[in-house]
Amino acid sequence: MAFDKEMQIIMKGVEEIVPKAELIKKLEKSAKENKPLRIKYGIDPTGSDVHIGHLVPIRKMREFQDLGHVGVIIIGDFTAQIGDPTGKDESRPPLTAEQVKANAAKYMEQLYTVLDPEKTEVRWQSEWFGEMGMAEVLKMLGKFTLAQFLAHDTFRKRYETGTPLGMHEIMYPVLQGYDSVAIEADVELGATEQKFNILTGRDMQKYFGMEEQVAVLSPILMGTDGVNKMSKSLNNYIAVFDTPKDKYGKTMSIPDNMIVNYFNYATLLSVDEIKEIETELKSGSNPKFIKQRLAREIVKMYHGEEVAKQAEAEFNAVFSQGKIPTDMPEFTFEEDEMSILALLTDTKLCASGGEARRMLKQGAVSIDGNKITSKDEVVKLDGEMVLKVGKRRFAKLIKG
RNA sequence: GGAGAGGUUCCCGAGUGGUCAAAGGGAACAGACUGUAAAUCUGUCGGCGGACGCCUUCGUAGGUUCAAAUCCUACCCUCUCCA
Image 1 (cartoon, helix red, strand yellow):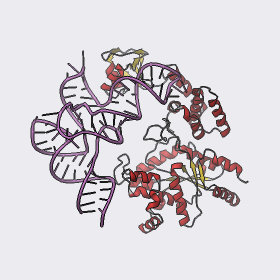
Image 2 (tube, rainbow, N blue to C red):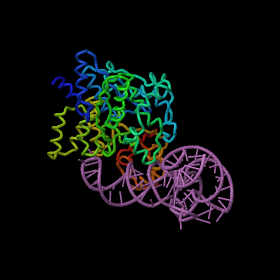
Image 3 (cartoon, rainbow, N blue to C red):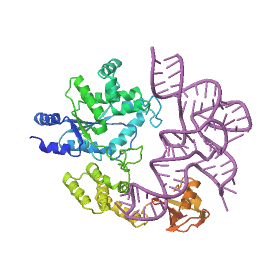
Image 4 (cartoon, chains in turn brown, purple):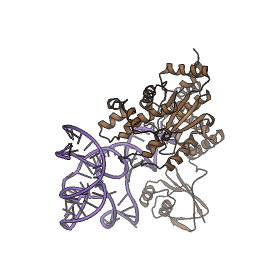
């Protein structure tokens, strides 16, 4: 069969392609007419922090680009500016055009760590929705029924559990679907949870007499807790903007049974290499070392080999050998001596005096390796000293 | 428009006049154990002060009371059923 090689690349680390046969046809046609396919991926510019879970489909887009196709990033500025009229979610107030622009710029900066800018097209939703009239909107909506949407799990669940569900949220798949029409998408990328929305895009294209897009669905990357999907709100994510040290440390904190999963979806290793790792794991070698390799790979992708090695050395020093990290926040004090409570709160290592007292009682506090348990301890400041709370909170105290 | 249910500390959720900073669970944090983790066990989990105390908190704003998350009034919001 033709396009075996292409399909192999495309299918790597992909959960599902619907329908696969159409994709092959599109590849054939693209080659014959010498016309690149248009690969769509939509982002929501409500925030600007991209985590490595987002990058799973983005990496797929890069692979398409390397095969000569065009990546089209849709910025959902239209919906972001409308916001949530029910006001139930205070964390998502309507954004101003400026905010959306700023978010989008930051977002793209992060995506370009993976994407090829030469083959990336950035489109704004408002380009087409900004002009659209009510008549057109209604026509579009008439294509779908409520039952269709309630068949969708997330809608049904929210409906059944009595969680507020705004009309605009129900429209979301319709809007996203129209994006595919507007940019004439051949393929839409997304996580499996996007299946419904992406398939709605197919219906929409068909309705507009267009060739339907193919859905290429990536698996959902689990968060560092190993239980929930990676998401910002659960604080179980590894961000593109995280420091190398944090990326390394966060990777090391994932449960062992997630190691292979991460290799598959968060690194660039080949299928064969990952298979090797899998057998090595099964043979009973210490997962720690394999996880370290994973952490190294992840850091390497964003910061290069050198930095990855440094992050590893640092991690080993701090956690395995209990040494102090090379860099930490520094605080200069003029005083000759200070109470331990004041130091803990002034350095923000503890949020309140109460917390500071608790940490002391629990034996979590030390200065230069000497444990301090008394609330009344007065510390004589002299030269540089390292204040430590728990395993990972450090501050350098400097006598000014 | 009508009828009913409801809005509690990061989340879920108990609490219907004082014994409530508010049960229980989850998350989080600390300690032990480890491989850095997970699991497990122990502890902490609004703020200030050594406990006793004080301040802020139970949708919002007022009110009743010696005393309110709990009662009253108005308002805002959510859900369900009927139309």
